[in-house]
Length: 217
Length: 169
Image 1 (cartoon, rainbow over the protein chains, first blue to last red):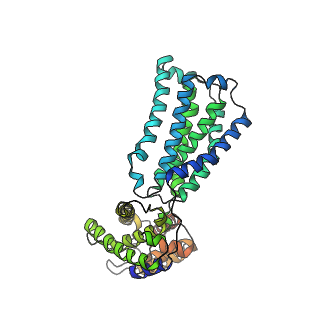
Image 2: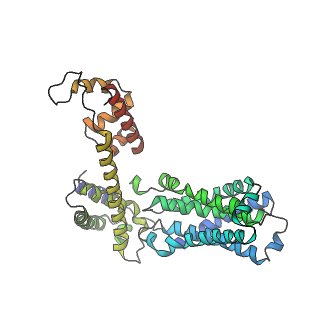
Image 3: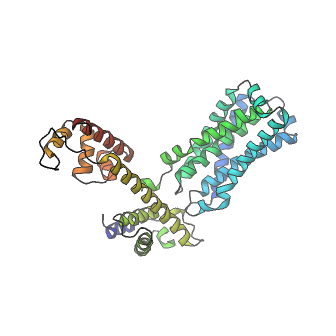
């Protein structure tokens, strides 16, 4: 195809386009659709018995705040990464990593302070149910956020995919925190933190599969 | 770009002509006269087209455009490196066997043709497109209704079969 012909073809196809709303609006829309899905799952699975007491406890609130922070930062970064040039902003690039590292770091530090990392991890009896719940609760938020991300145009689909899945998995982890009564750091690290990281590791594949808008151009 | 977002084709055409010149200059300054400069320019125009709704009309246009241009350039360079690496490492058609009829260092075209004819149809179609019709991976993928990755994998397997059929070299 000659470039001149391509220009003629593209300009002939020119129709008014709906401009993409700002990332904050899309984030709010995602939260509005995802939160009810997670809440319904928590109610169906049964919230932890001491939830009301925990909601007044500072360590629990801090931990929950870290996960909510990770969810929000990842989702916002995922959405900004679908606008060319915005994906380079430091907020989009580094905040999710810092929050993720803080959450994992605090859990490791608590584990090291209590019983030692290896001893603590070895003493964990295995709770696959939490990882499964996180994955299931992440499904609806992941689908909605992927849809929101697809509306944009990611220049780095792999990174956007990681951020989308991390945000969705964090939404699942928020739900799991409201269900799971086990507060030990080893459990939190192995069955709440690691599933979020593991799911996020699938992000590049998801991103290239569903967000490669330019590849489809 | 604001006019283009509003659907004004003439303004959009003017913009694309301007972006073509800017892209070509930018790519030439970084790649020199590579044979695929025009591919990058056209991919950039297509990317601008599919992403034009993401441009925020209250912000400067240049950073938005250059982010797209750079990403298309990087993708193209990566793609070319992969292709070049594969072609040098193993995608060249194998040399003819010494037991087959050859004249000096010439390739035994007839042997290759026979070997190609004995390949499964899909492999034959892919190799024929890439090597005989000189089509790009994208063109072959579009014509046969396959993904680009599937075309590359099929071609790679086809080359290996050919290599075995032509004496294992």
